[in-house]
Length: 400
Image 1 (tube, rainbow, N blue to C red):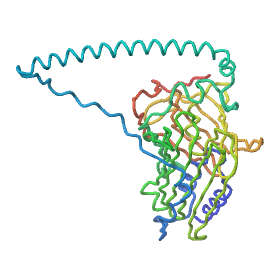
Image 2: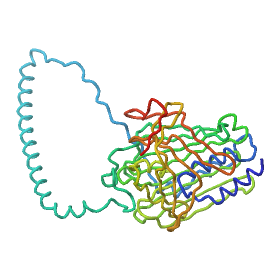
Image 3: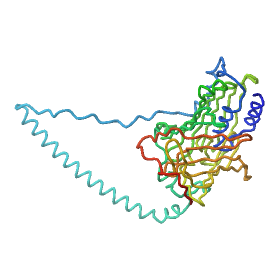
Image 4: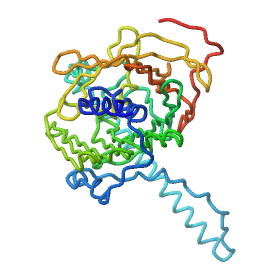
C-alpha cells in the first residue's frame, strides 16, 4: 500500500487550497489511498500543537445567548378592602401617566417621521447614484442580494448534511456539513460553519481519520474572519489557523504539522488579499447564497496560503437525483479557478446542490486516476424553521 501513500504525499505537497472542493478531496484521499495503520498518531505535546497565541489574541469569540422567554404571569393579586381605595387611586394615577406618555410618544413618533421624510428628500438625489452602483465587489453577481446580504438566507442554525464517502462502493466514512449557532466575533454577529470528516470503524483499521474545520462569517458583510483546521489521523497531526484583517486587507496563515517521518514542521505567512475574499471553508457555504441560473456567473475572490484566486461555479445541468431520502431536484455545478488571471483546471469534480432557496450540498463526485470518489447524502437536518426538501415523485429528468 506504499504506492498509494506516495501518491498521497505528492498530492498534499502540491495542494494549496486552490478550490473549496479540495477541502473535501484532500481528506477523501487520506481516507482512501494512505498506507495501513490502526490508530491515531500520538504526540506528547499535543496541547502545544493547537496553541497559536497570535491567532487567539486577535480573535474574540463570544456565544450569543438565545432569545429570553418571558415567564408566564402569575395569578392577579387583588387588594384587601382597606387598601382598595389606595390601589384605586394608584391605578387612576398610573392611567393618567400612561395617557400622557402615550400622547408624548405619538407626538415624538410623528415628529421623527416628519424629520426622516425631510431628510430622505434632501439625500434622494445623492443616494440615487449610489443605488445604481453594482454590489461590491463588482465581480460578484448582485441578483438576489440587497447590498452584501442575500434576500433569501440559505442558512439555518441546526442545519446538518451528512455524506457517505465511498470508493469502489466501499464506504470509508462520513463527511458532515453543519451550521452551528450564531456567535459574536470581535463584537459582530457571525455565522459559524463546520465541516468534519470521520472514518468508520472498519476503515479506521486501515487509516483512522477524525478531522474538522470551522470558520466564522460576518452576518452583514458576508466575509470571513478566520478559518481553522484540526487534523487527527494515523500518519499525521496538523493544526491550521488563518485570520483576515479587513482594515489592512491582509490574511495571516499559521500551520503546525507532525508526521512520524518528518517530525514537527511549522509554517507562517502573511499577504495582501482582495476585499470580500472567502477562504476554503467559507467558500463551500458562500456559493449557496448566489442565484444559480443558466447564464449567471457564480464567482468570488478566494484566498488561501499566500495565493489569491478567483473561484467560479458553472451550472452544468439540472437533474433529479435519486437518494435514500427520496428523489431530489438538484443543480449540478462544476468548480473552476483562476490564479493571476490564468485558468487552472481542478480535475473532474462535480457538486450537486438542492434546487431550492437552501442549495444544500447532497452529492460530490470526483474522478481520480483509478475510479471515482463519491459523497452521497445519507442524512439531512433542516435546522431552525424546518421546511421541506425539493422532492419529486419519480426520477423524470428536466432541463433548463
